Length: 187
Image (tube, rainbow, N blue to C red; front, side):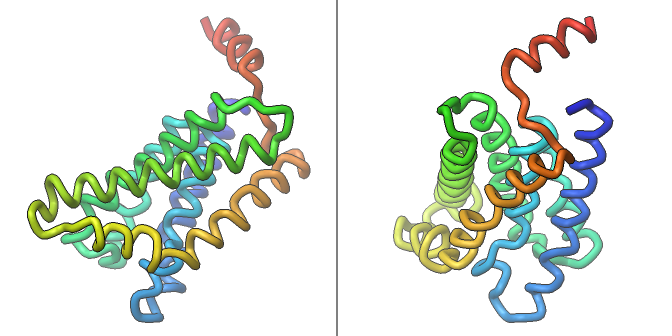
């Protein structure tokens, strides 16, 4: 996929990252339960690569906070870090994980990114944003128990969306050889 197409998809994912949570914020606590901003960021990393994924993870919550007030300023720093890690790691892993099965590659990349983002969120809260007041119990509850419906939705929908976009020819799975050839052509 060329850079222009990646940029367009990344812009679309940022826009989805700003608008999708609006539907969930009409329900109290639905954002932390269904994690609507995570989906477009993870999709961006898987489809557009690590740099665009990371930028989507930074821009979507930043723009959303400025335009809608959600996430609130107190939660914005840790969300920026967490979502940037989701986008970056999903993009890195989808390029690195190589089994004979595309769906397995997607699931391994997705689960790895989801764990990396949650670990980042927990570590930053424990060490920086809520140092001394953030416990393992709080982290496990917020990152896994409360978010279980969102985690299930991510595991169900994200690989299906990526595979559907590939099948429709809107995006294509790139191999390491394709990327090397593109790099040589651009030099």
